[in-house]
Length: 267
Ligand SMILES: [Mg+2]
View 1 (cartoon, rainbow, N blue to C red):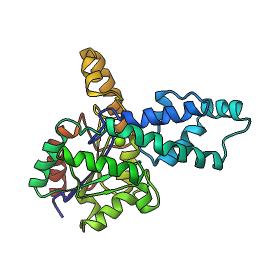
View 2 (spheres, protein in one colour; view 1 turned 120 degrees about the horizontal axis):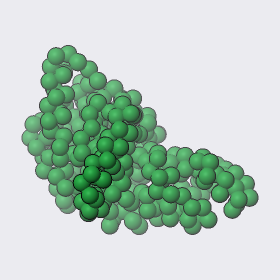
View 3 (cartoon, rainbow, N blue to C red; view 1 turned 45 degrees about the vertical axis):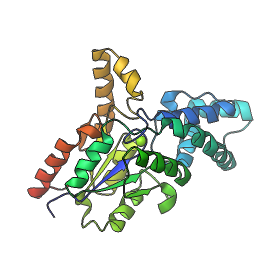
């Protein structure tokens, strides 16, 4: 095994929805409707994990837990999480369509990867219903992974490797070292590492920078540089083998991975 066979891309913040804005909007609204104020930072902290797990994780933040107890008279329970998740689904579905645009350069880059013989797949922290909206709209813009899995498909999401492992089985990939996981959050990197794959973080288009394409371009050059360095630091801290600014910049990194594979190196 000396060549890569497949690349697994995350959805929001990696291939669509520059800045991963849709989940922040829906999650903030969910908590606001329940009398609890959560910051963008609170929401972005554990982005990428399954949305039900994400709600539970936000509720565990000390400032959120204390607000919840003040408003609702008791610490959040399992029933509260179930109810919040049910309430979250329509909120998220509502804001998905306006935030489903394919990130600049993704469709063209993925086409070139396919031309090199790479298989393309996707994973997400969204539910099946949410991901299906993205699959349909992205296909119209020329981005269509041949398989996309969500946590419900395999009984759990990130940081566990199961979505990636099921993709390996479905695509008949010969070794996990022949696969690359690409994503915009530390939980994406943890997922790829748990699956024994190479991992590539994207710093500019996703959750760690947290800005739309337009907002990012409005920043002064030095501000943008600092923001992207901090984003890259968090992805590297999570263990990313490489960090690029966006999927459009990934080809040189894949070539470096192939060069490593050729000398017998493994993730
Ligand atoms: Mg993402």
